[in-house]
Image (cartoon, rainbow, N blue to C red):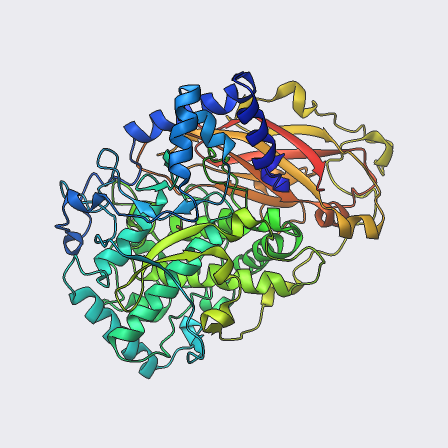
Length: 601
Ligand code: C2O
């Protein structure tokens, strides 16, 4: 499965297509591209139907739609045109040239999302014919990003001052807050096309581009703020939502008189209320210590137990010209999504600002939320386990994005230059990681609840419940609890085998309308899952989404590493695992395509 093992497509497809006119081998890709192209020409999920904030007007004209992007070593577009002529479709050639994603061409007059909801305005950066390759400055002063709840008044004053200036700049200035906000809208989907693949539009979410894109975005946001106040050491604060004192919205953002305040937030989620990292719009959150423990367990699951390989942590591969197989990494899926939904204003039609991707960048809190997401990338690499490394696939390393830097230069950046934040000139203030010790005490072997096979049932007098095999009952609409038994490729693996390869629960073909908010939880071998939550060892994870504006069907897959969890629930020697899917929001609106257990390669 490509999204899990990062299988390269390039060479094989190149040969197939170059040596034969038989299109059958690429017919599926061709169909995918057709579908995708229809999707993008008709639907603009960044499109705002309603102006949420008067300050977001934008007078940029359509002439900006056409960024002049210089070609690389060879002009892939020419080659594509040639192949397109040969085969009568560029879809074939798109598959042939699977390559790094070059997302540096913003604008196609027909499909530009109007992120600011001003007619004829778009979310592309102000035009500039000169795009240069960004070179990281050497010997720059180190920027230390503080935990927001620990920042002192002097720091807060400084950030307020910088943000005040940023908000006061003309809307078409690349350093204005309106332009910074538009960056997210543009990259959320539709505005950027892949260079060399003119019909393939970009979404940086649900894939291995999620971490590096947001890292670069924050880097320039921070450098620009520093420039505006003449302080190259200025570093943005991070919303330390993984630590009890950091769980409420940080005070500096909640001050109504501060330029860091945004009125489009949920009034019921103001400080001192703490975030629920397993938040669902329609189920009550735990309170007090139970909430804190549940948050620790979510963090432990996402950072430690379910994300032991790069594939699980970073998300699915996404290469040039490919239709995206949507598969978010562990942190993107949870709690990143929950923080967006919890913060956004449910009174607004679309949950602005944080509750939707097109508007999320309009809330200054967004940048601090993502700073903590970004911090998780650094922390993940330091945790024990031999597979906790950055991806070494050149298609990832050479993927490129476009930004204005602090000197108003339009620059092309590459993923390979952002894997080490020290080289980028910043680090995070060190604070304790209280969730690191939140692994539940292991249950004795054969003592797990709701077990999937008779052999391990402790009490022979109790007849085991038998659940249908996943392949017999899926696909199925998630109208209520779905509980299935899934065979394991291998049981009772040695410690060494476990360290080498991860056992992974894959739930795929998760389908819903993109403008719906849905959430369901996943439990392994539980008996009372409907009442259960992260505080139970059997909680494996949760799927939820940040809805878009379009109602296009979205199809995603979710992968959870379960090697450790199976030990925790005492099921490591079982032949089957019982997986329960519990809808929390959007009952009846999600279809589950299938569920299987695999061992990573
Ligand atoms: Cu680009 Cu939190 O999303």
